[in-house]
Image (cartoon, rainbow, N blue to C red; front, side):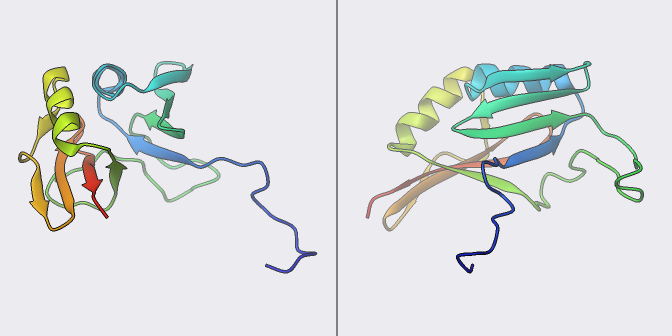
Length: 137
């Protein structure tokens, strides 16, 4: 970017929108299992969370609007077909796995170690995929 070019994202933040089928169930998962904090709630159909220095906006399914006329927000329909995933780098994958298991996270497998990385995956109530990963460089 040239020095005299404006930055379109000055003082901005990135928010990820996740479509969820049951807001109360998802709220419980993100707060009580992952430890996210509520930033703001909107009329019972959306919730803004702060998680690891990032924003996550949980919304219920919805149809097109004037500013997105052909776009529908839908929850994942097949847990085995992923188009979005989170990776959380952790200090100790096995320790994080044990803590999250005790809180009720449903892991696909226990942690696997491949070379310098140990990782495992779990899903939220709507099957959004999360990975915890430890890298020993």
